[in-house]
Length: 376
Image 1: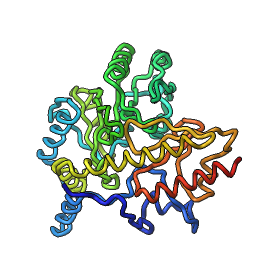
Image 2 (image 1 turned 90 degrees about the vertical axis):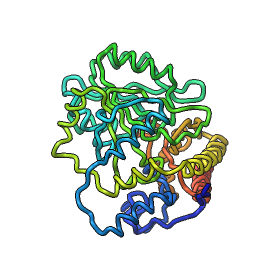
Image 3 (image 1 turned 180 degrees about the vertical axis):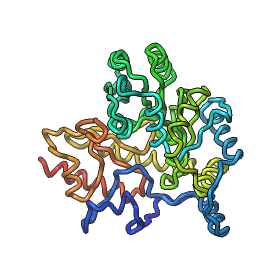
Image 4 (image 1 turned 60 degrees about the vertical axis):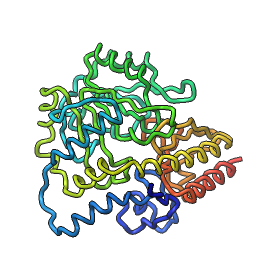
């Protein structure tokens, strides 16, 4: 098995990186840990696929081949336990535009969109993009993990939203929803005639090896390999939509808006589906080690708390605002960029991406500790 060197530090500055070349940094020496891409080199199979396209020297329009459709179908069956049909697939450039199209198809200014909070920001921003009401309910801490307040969930459903946006594994809470939780979610949404639109992009990034990702098998379920294989900049995702009428209504909202998939995204997705497990078998232990290091150090700090993640590489770190003030800004001023909890409608939290070489994570921890103890 190839041993990937995740300790390797690669300079990403001056590469038009959304993460590293943020205009707000100016000349400041900033360690960026906001947006969810990894600071690791991609697998050799992906590089080989890209090299093959370069050698061919043609970059024309592309079609989604049946081989890609079959590969996605097999992965969903083998890894997530859901037997699907090829006819259910709709290939799209990315999950966020897919969510937007789904909301455009099935929500309205009269009924609105429902999601738990905190949540990945497009889940709540899409309501404003559509001009539709946003309904929310809180996640709660229970038995050391984030889960739904199911009483509040049902009360929100009673307000009549027609679309529920479900993030599983949850970003930013890191929750992998259990079989019982998924059954309750499906039962409540069915009872109140609310379609479930699920984003399962983090399904392969399991931090707690004792849990297993379970598909909710919703009206529309989105999958992509881009988070697990660090190819987010290429795009490419698949929507699984079992009902033909629902599928057509969704597709109608994509016509004229969604471009064809590029050959690069198609070939790279084919490579990720076909490659052996070496990448994930190396990546996940490294992420787990970073997670253990981070949570141990965070929970030793006064006024700082972090629950263990079940999945993702996105730490959701709470802070006492009376003790630490505007913690995100103070970290930024000290040279560490993390995302503000308010961006996720999450209050006194920050989100930190720890998919990076350990030396960078240690530097981030040092900055956090220096800011925490500067307040005492």
